[in-house]
Image 1: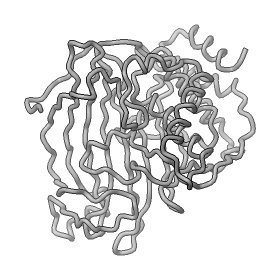
Image 2: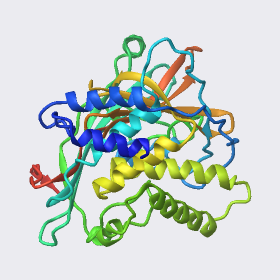
Image 3: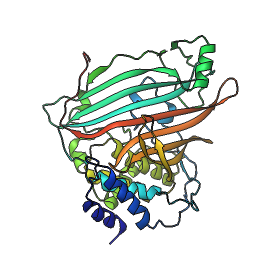
Image 4: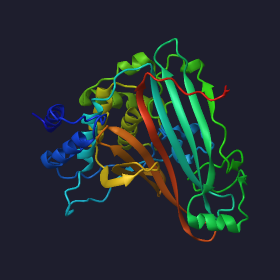
Length: 391
């Protein structure tokens, strides 16, 4: 019997509720047991070299926000190896162990409902137009996909305002006269770290608005990793739910994508590895696939090199979770650190955080972070709370 089956069997006899409806103690006990039982093979060297990947990172919902950071568009991407953490004096869970525990918990998630709901808070940083300080903006977004034909699809969003990112940035903002709006020149240099805003940014929060999703959204179950083509409910139901068959399904799909739009500069092996990782994260964070499919996506991630555990972390909304990280090259020589904050007690992805650094006009090195925090992912029989302003 393999370890995955041991973990699943053990989970089913725990008294506590792994899904967290009664207590997180059962999942915590399972994760502790996995740390003891799991024998992680020697770290394999990641055989991926920097190159061009064809698909970007549009899985983040910030595509509808005021800012559409360049790192989420088609760009040079590679997964780089992380430093080894072997020799640590403490028995912290490895990335593989965390992902396997999340897979076990995910299998107990609800499998159906009237709506597939994803609620996020997207936060982003960029410099002010003079590059004197860093601003942080945020936007809330809810997507309600109706499985029943008599129900309406909705997208509900609200700009939550813009402010200086840190106390140091606030001091520079005050020195600049404490502006409450920012207008950007079209030719502003951004080092590919963010796109120049097409309209002024405002410090004040905007109105909460609802948009009915029509046209191609009718009968759609969303997309995978930001693909332009939406998937139907039937297509999502047909996704294989075992790790090996799911991986074959995804790799065949990736091959078709790479073949349909070839790029002579693309390292196919690297592109496939990166897109496979992104597709698995997309399944976990947004696609209304079955709990078994989403659990298998976690198990595929557990098999991939280049992902390491960083211990507990507080996500941008203040929730604690286990942190996994890897690196991506967004342009030659420019890397971004990607962190996935996971709650092993529920199997839910709490947040995805990307971090870069930039140099301000005064020479100060400053962080630019982009994050998507997931407040809710999954099936519900609830109805959306619609604002007065609807499109």
